[in-house]
Image (cartoon, rainbow over all chains, first blue to last red; front, side):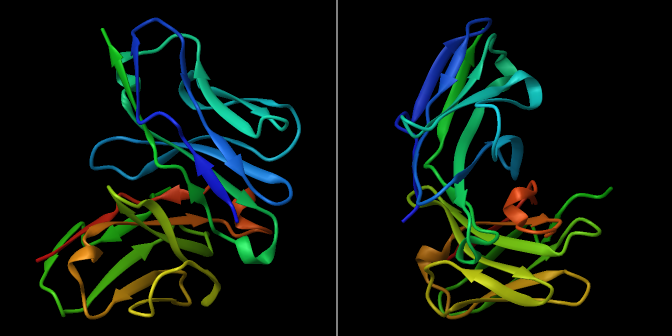
Length: 116
Length: 116
C-alpha cells in the first residue's frame, strides 16, 4: 500500500533562513512525488513534482525538493524563507498502474511558520 | 484560463439529509478527482472520473457517489449524511492525457460541508 509520512506537524523558521519540510514515502514500483501548498480557506496549489530524471527538482516560488531513492525521501527546501511562505504544506505520492489513476496519497501536512 | 470551480462554497445540512456538490474542471481537462479533507484524517481520495467513467475509487462507503457529464463537469453525492461527513471537499482536474498523475492536478477552492 502507498503511504506518505510528514514527521513534523509544524516547522518554525526565521525569515531569511533556509527551510526544510520533510517527507518520506512508501510505494510499490516507481513513485511519482508532489508538493502542494494550502493557504487558509483555499484549495491546494501545486509547487513541484518528481516523475523521473534529476533528483533535484525546482518548482514555484523558489522551492525545490530532492528525491532520495535509498532513503525514500522527498524533502522540500527553500534557501531563504519569506513570511509569505507561511502555510500548510502537503507531500503526495502516486504510483504507476491503472489502479492508481488520478489518485494522490497525501501526507498529514506540515504547517510552516516563518517569523519576521 | 478559468480555474477549477466548485459550487457551492459552503453548505450546512442536518444528519440524514443528502447533498450534491459540483465541480467544473479547467476547460479541456477530462479528468476530475475528488478528495475529502478533515483535521483528523487529512486528505483522502474519494474517486476519479475520466470521460464519464469512474476509473478509480477510494475506501469510502457507498453513501459517497459521483458522476461525470459529457462536458467533464462532475458531481459528487453523499446520502444519509453523518456528523463525520463534515469536511472540506476538494476536486482537482487534469488534462487526462495518458496517466493524469503525470500531469499537474489543479485543485478547486473546495466546498465546506457542515453536518449538524
